[in-house]
Every structure is written in C-alpha cells, then in structure tokens.
Length: 77
Image (tube, rainbow, N blue to C red; front, side):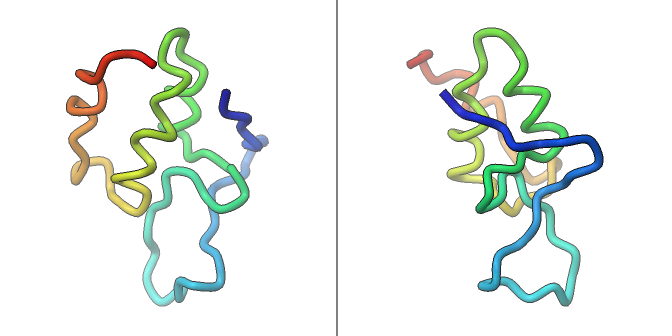
C-alpha cells in the first residue's frame, strides 16, 4: 500500500537531478509527496494502487499529456 506524505499546502518537489529553470509538474516526488490529482486518486476506494502505476509513465507530465484511461483498463492487482 502507498503511504502518502502529503500535508496541507505541500506539493511534490524536484530532486537534485532536475534543474528548476522551468516549472515542471511532478505526480509523486522522491519523498513520496503526491500532487493533488495523485492524492485524490489514492484516497478513492479501489484505486489506491493507481497513483504509483500512473507515476511510472507520467511522473513529469501535465494532465493533458496523460492517458489515464490506459491505466484504468488494467486489471486490479
């Protein structure tokens, strides 16, 4: 089970491997902090596994660049 470290006002950050020249999204960061969308999915009953699956493909993607439907069609683990 995923443990979210999201706290009020906290957002995912970038580790030292990424420069902060441009503002890039991050689905779940290296400390386990979930973005707002990832957190809502995590808290949805029956979909707790989904944020980690989405993060594997779309960690640095904007929402309009993702294809979450592909993840939803996978059988539940």
